[in-house]
Image 1 (tube, helix red, strand yellow):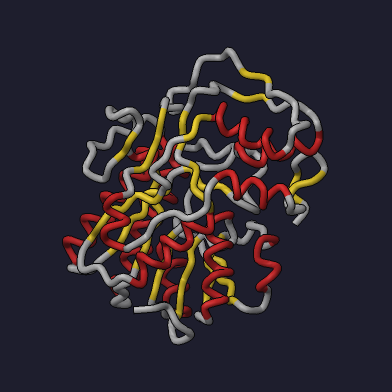
Image 2 (image 1 turned 135 degrees about the vertical axis):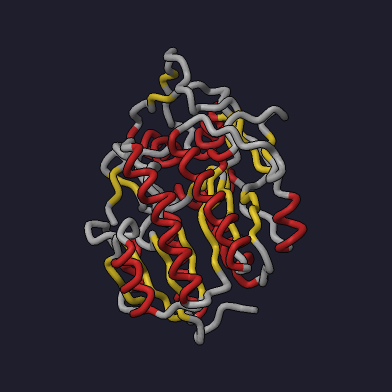
Length: 320
């Protein structure tokens, strides 16, 4: 079933990096889009579709606030992308639990009350912890997260599984790997490298051998929509990545290939943080099999495209 103009689509976290790209795509599809987010969040990323979506200020950690929003919106599809713990300064364990776990419980309770059967939630590779297969992570692997954020996201996934079993309603959890692309927050790796390339100031980076599965945000949004259009009949967890690992050192090499004048980074000798697992690579075979989806954009072509955009100036600070 495709998402059409007849759908009333709720996106929690819709003003964020990933959520804003999804909202713009949904608007282009003609859906009636409703963005639910906290009042202090910026809507700069949604300027190009201003007036094409409805905004609702919602505190997902407050059951009454979530209840009112669902009654006002009456959604038929829910994309629950709101998270706490991915931005600098978001280290409060209690706030992480309230948003990622309790907030999910409130959203799912309202989905049950409104009999919503197309629900897609944001999961994370951090739920897995350290892989025992050279970094390759499968949905069938045991999850032993090594960060407070990973623990909270795994708890959210478990909440969804229990809710689905108890109510008989389907919900899909997509475990995103290292998402990057235009509009990405400036503190993350790709924007830091692009800022260095443009300013000529060396970037200060950690261990060059750390390997991640970098997937472009457009491919991730394709996966989100594809999973919603495919009518599941139960709870399921699907990895969203490229299936290919790339070390930080190799990523630097790709960026320097596009920007030959980019200075070499300054590599840190500090020990890795406990959550900096050596490698995190998605086994995407289940996602390919169930949703007929695979990533399309390579890192090389994405860096060239991003290099031609004016997303970052003034030494990496976003101007939009």
